[in-house]
Length: 113
Length: 112
Image (cartoon, rainbow over all chains, first blue to last red; front, top):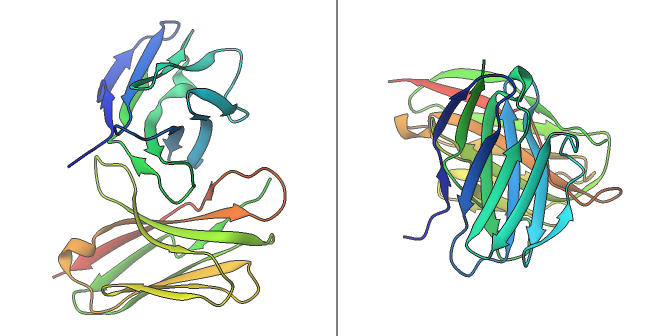
């Protein structure tokens, strides 16, 4: 049963520290999405990639967030420096190109103190 | 940007009851998706809709693409305890940035 995996599942860090979240898309999927979920804002799209190339990262605060796909089996989302307002659950999803075919990972729950 | 208004925000029902929830917008959407999220997990796609007026079922779930293309509805018939979770609508707007927009979710609680 193929699944998107995300690590770590939970992260507690102090303000100012760098945070790196990793995602392994389902093998064969060529599209990767990063979402952030908070109580106040709900689910927000941060960025997405197709064939490892960034297609849209307009949802991401550019000054502190960066997203990359070093290879087809790994996507990373980095926050540097982290702030308390970054506390949220970050989801990665992968698919085969269309918006319908998104399979979400279990998320990384981030708490910035 | 486009926003989706999902209602109700929460529902408390008895097992066996039917459930209705909806999503509305002031903008036109050309795709509507309905997801369910359980605690500690990511959203899982339930139903996808692509045409105005389309009515699609998935077991006890039925969703409709509103005729105005500005709304969508999800119904769950004869609810069971495993239906508990948060249901999200999501839409792909016809105009503007081609990105999925999510509603705020409907939290469903079922009393056995």
